[in-house]
Length: 163
Image (cartoon, rainbow, N blue to C red):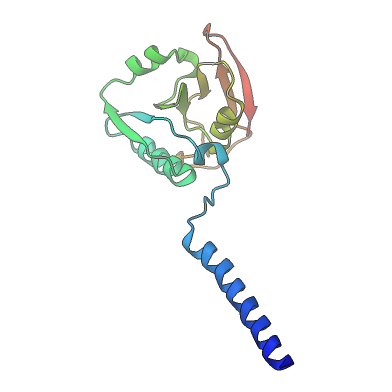
């Protein structure tokens, strides 16, 4: 009788373990750790210049790190998009993403986008100007910190963060 009780207890434990393991197996976890990006239900548009190679590499980086569904629009002239969203000339790069109500200019590390979406500041967007070596989507070794700027609603800007 004790043996049967122990057998039943063991069977219940084994079934419990199998149940827990099956949950982890069948539920697709968000493994990138970027909670704001994982829960983003807003439209994402990626504007890039026609035939730009680094834009394609950055787009793949953004998709792989964020899991976002991104609509890509190729433009012969991306300046009209930059003007439309208020990207200052001094802070321009080769492509512009619109994520929710913000623009994200340049080869932005995913950590900066996550910070932007977590904090939700009252700004137009963020920019990593130019095409710095070692930034996501850019070849070469990273030389120093990447300085990311936030652009205020009046067009002024200040440092947002360094990576």
